[in-house]
Image 1 (cartoon, helix red, strand yellow):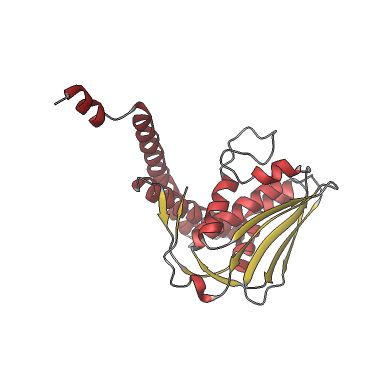
Image 2: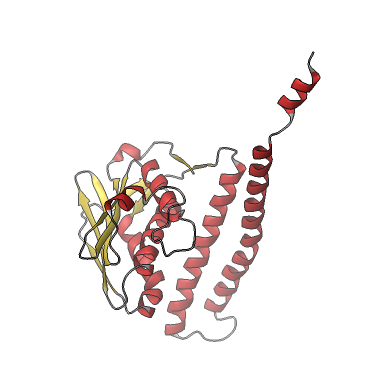
Length: 254
């Protein structure tokens, strides 16, 4: 028996060790972030119940928005933890009936102050007769938030952001149109690839659009981008709105 060969087979590779360390770090970080997020949720709930004094209507509106944002963050952290508990990085999606129009309204309300800081006017046009799709609400909200935050971040100041919810064949669609730097065709083709950022001037790593593509495709949908030389840009996605996905066990692997 060749003991050296046997030991080399059983010994984890350096890449495996680094991967395990990375996953442990992300899982630990996500777990640690959940505690303050839960504390924030409880604190805001107490404020809204008037435990620390009367809350004015204007204050209530903002506090309710903050509460929704914290709850979303808590759900996302739970999703990250679930991913790293699975060695393949796969999330099982929780299927329910989801209104794309409602997600658009929720996310627009949450991002309105960021838009106001840049002087961007948001217009939301719901043209859909069938708003609902079957899918994971947390993950679909993640897609809408990613697209919307990018649309505001890279839009020119003091411009208009048009958001549309509509039907196309057997799909319910979400898209935005803004005024932002033109994306050449070669960049459009790879914009949803892993570690590709929306803009060369962006210093971060591009994971938001990559994750959005994976989530949309896991729902049987299509994500898309169109860019024009007059600096008009369109990003969006479409999800089947029939019952084909109702009893489907969906998952997404990042």
